[in-house]
Length: 106
Image (cartoon, rainbow, N blue to C red; front, top):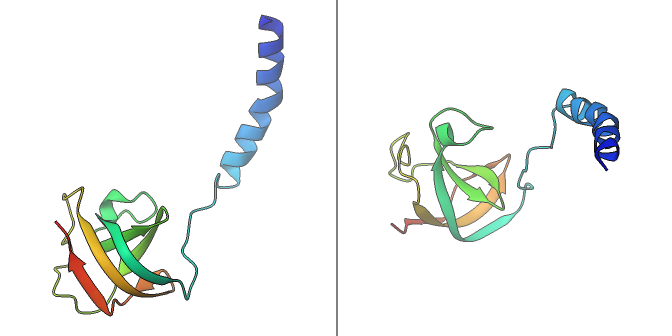
């Protein structure tokens, strides 16, 4: 049994290295034209691995969507505030949404 585990590890190791070299899993994105009308997790960009700098985002199906336009928010409204929720209505364009309706829930 131990021999089988070692053999399996030796066979799978190159695949793991190849996956890492090719960038691993593709980053989740929300398609342009996607209509939003719901409550989403509000996150600061610095807390999102694929962003890494402060900014206002909502998470849609695991993908960050930047909040654009004048919403009366500061540039780091959600920084250090895990657990915030926002109700957003709008359409995604190039990973951003300029909401036609926006309300922080907590």
